[in-house]
Image (cartoon, rainbow, N blue to C red):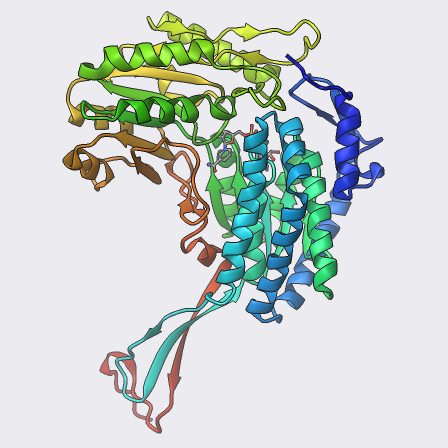
Length: 508
Ligand code: NAD
């Protein structure tokens, strides 16, 4: 059902105006923006031309040369102000995320909250971007490491976290003394424009921010490619499909640039005989159906011990049958639309293949609303399948949960790890041996491994990312900041002798 009382296009315009985006930024261009809620066109943003892109990159590089001389804690002050501006804009930006990306309102707001959280983290970090002091083997010498800014950092982001991914990168990159150039998904330029306006307000309050320190480039793959190939961009943080990573990574490697790759996931959870099923069912439902299965960390595979299978799976089926699918702006909705028709077709194709593989499927059908034929809502699919066939090993970016039965934990872990991706994972158990085994070197091979919570919904305080085809990148918390800086090792001789390392004698 659609609850809107005002036409969605008018609402978008009102939100953008409140967020400080002028109409010319989203009118008259050829980057056509649709809302997945109704499928209708809501804006036409002008694309950034190739020459404007080159200019923005050059300007960002210049801005970095100046910004790197600003003391880090002072740079942290800019990010603190950004956090304040985001707090003030939270209701509007959260709603715009919902309209542009289709996630339910609490998730839209939650995404902006993550932006606020990373600003707090980065502001504190601005006083901690220091290195170690190390013992020197030579008398009257000291060794230490110093962390320096890197340059203009490229950020390429996906449609499903249209603004948070920028902030995870930008907040760290900026306190580390870098400039940031952002190429958001071509499907979500409006939330990017709003974020840029919010940043500009923080910059104005800060005063004296070099021009072009945070640049926004709107367009498709070609704009991203320009960022990836520019010698003025020493690091590109790219979030999106594994196919994108496959195109981007060799280009960055060819010019010895750094890459933070945050690519596709195929996340699984193991439910063991001792699992607290009440908690487990809720965790599974949220991880698998939240954001209509369009999170990189969405739960896609469930490995259930045979002793609890017949208790757990019927409960899940009941929830799948009754979960409210509809307008993500409505308070009761838990599952919003798929991003577009392509996503819907990919989902149907995957389900057809699973059926050919002998699966038994609950749900998965389209839910059509007569008044909005261009929107693609689906009932999330629960797919019981005997073995992990090719389609199960593939990431389909839609709410499909493949459910498999297991007998021995050893086998479950083997199946768990035998997919090309390695992002997020969970085990549900009250058995400490099983939990610790899952987290050990011989357990989950993912970048994120959880116990008794689902695969999605990471906190910004931890390093976020995954292994194998997920790309190996880590962003957000912990020591992810180090990637945005270059490390210099310094040796200082405060004596009068010149002792050489390894006792080498070189008498002249
Ligand atoms: P996508 O790969 O279609 O696009 C992502 C971004 O990459 C877009 O901005 C796009 O324009 C750009 N791009 C694509 N090809 C490029 C190229 N050759 N050179 C430069 N830029 C290029 O992904 P999507 O459909 O927007 O997002 C869904 C995918 O993203 C899923 O696979 C999901 O798992 C993944 N994802 C991963 C994470 C993570 O942190 N690991 C987070 C969110 C989404």
